[in-house]
Length: 273
Length: 274
Image 1: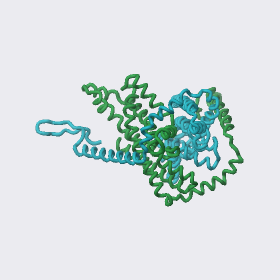
Image 2: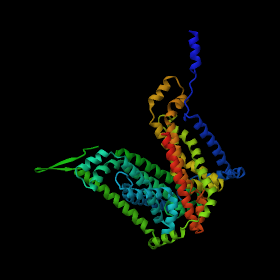
Image 3: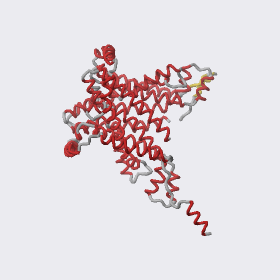
Image 4: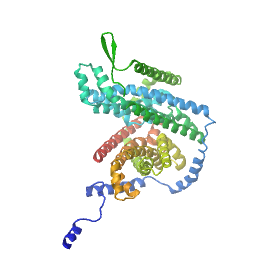
């Protein structure tokens, strides 16, 4: 009897260990080692200057202190104008961007489009996704001059990359049997899209368009930094004039509007589904 | 959902309609309001536009385009250090963000938060981090830390907390409670329930979200140089300001390639995890 329990103790560990996240030993240690080497190299290139950091602490405290209390009163007119301009800019760039995204998204769905259309549309999407809105905005400002029109162009182009990609993926994932059923009734191409594809992708697309409105509003706060109009221009001016209390007010308003949009989008998505 | 289709009886014919008359009018009204808002927004924007510049834009585009070709390939050697910095900003920024986002997400998830007041604070951290663009964070941090890679890294970190924490807490709220209950039934403490019941369920999400955000951060960190926060944006801004268009096209191509590689890596790694 005792020999059996000895054997049991020898063969089975009495303490349970969590199984590792990556089961291959060599791969696990290789990744850990590689990560450590990379971290050391990356941190070395950070050029952290302790003296500059120490200098920065009191400066940072003064800087943060100068944000409080947020000043909503002094530049009320300008801030209000900027916010409204941003909202209008976000709305039309979302609408224009989605209007452009629908044909591109249909073309980028492998199950709808012939190969050359698919490749063209996918390259448009990839191009629009690669460059951040702010780079698009720099070029738009160069081409169309300062002001909200440049911001509108940049945000619309940015919307294409986001919306057309998700639309195309959703169409590719849609149920084929429904599409086939509608086709079997002798529907034309447009009827087919309208009655078989559109109802399947619509709920998600409505949610996504509100989400994109939210993104465009947030991005409109930065395209202004390079001259694209909107609240970003006001914010940039406030920073340049060292009116940090006004800047704090602007940031709080942006946060508030984003919160409202986020709440609205989750409510709308629940209502649609 | 209401009735999916409506049959209208008019005399001897039965007509099929998709919606009731009332619903149809409601939808038309919705469209009317929506279109009015868009038209109004458009009129505001177009009032502030100098249309002469817009008409001139195609000629300008052709002009700048012709100046960008051919890219100045010899300039690439000067871009190696900036692109290395850009990648470091994205990677270290993502690490900072994930370190903070995981505890914030646990505080924000309804089923793991210590107290509902903690949850409100965590949600506020998430929203404010998400609402303020990394460029604005960088703008402020350059004031505090001075220009350089460090300001950019922290800006990317602060911006990403909200995104990562939001995705994480949503997945924490969707975990399978029965596994946690099974661990609790063994007499495990709260911390043990967390590490053995909850964490293994969300670990793939944590890794996936981190990689996904890293991919986005590579893109975001290419522009931080515009406000002096390091990375390749510094060269881009300088080249645009000095009208060195052949350098601009080289930089854009380098960004394009970097983004493609990071997207590929991210897709591969996420594919391996999930």
